[in-house]
Image (cartoon, rainbow, N blue to C red):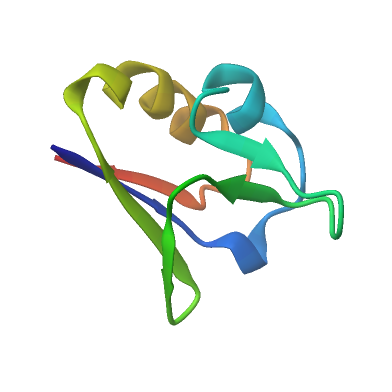
Length: 74
């Protein structure tokens, strides 16, 4: 299992995460920021545990994020 962590309040809405990992990310129509699907909020850090099959695409999304607000932990 891996954990994806997202600091949503710092998102600038660039859409890279959605383009690279469509199964796990969506853009909010309300505020234009990305949403980590299935995640729970804990003090501004949204996190979700996922299987190893999602590691590669989400790692690419984390690397592409221009504000470095996506973390992948194994």
